[in-house]
Image (tube, rainbow, N blue to C red; front, side, top):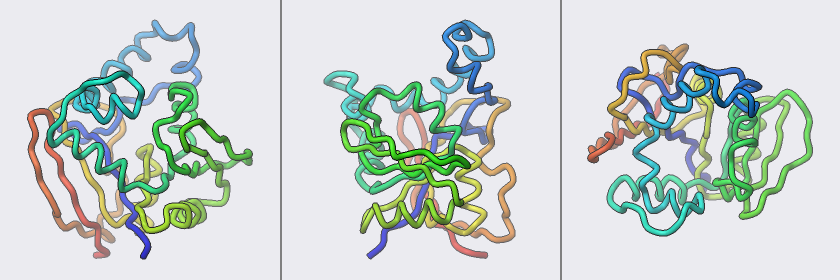
Length: 221
């Protein structure tokens, strides 16, 4: 039995899942690390994701050392990882991650990158292999479904890739960790959503000391 297609993101109270974008070349260049725009992006992203960093599971997965917090936030992070048999992501997310992920990338499953260029698969230690798909999101998702087997496929990001799958009717479910943060500007999760085609059913709402976990099933309207 095929699994679900889902996405799971942290979101600010004013609806942003990432700060205002910074040019990738500026973000990655060593001489740009002191650039105010790059520092702003990093500070806002860290604040948005702050609930994840103390968790035992995240520390284990990113090889940050022993210890860490347990509890419902930790359970959510672990459950999200364990249900995922393959991921799909956009090229911008991959470009940022290629330079910043550790050698043992944190996915430990096949990852299908939606791109316009051809590239051979990139295998990393720990079970992550990036595959590059240049003929559209449907083909990337088909390959991810096959690789995932009876586990779920996660649309990892970024925002444009998530929205493209959502508007195409390819998402079964999504979860939001609603963070008590205001960003003011940035990438809005639902900016450009085709609301005429999408109906939501709330599946779960769970507050924790740091965020509120919201899960919705997606149905055609």
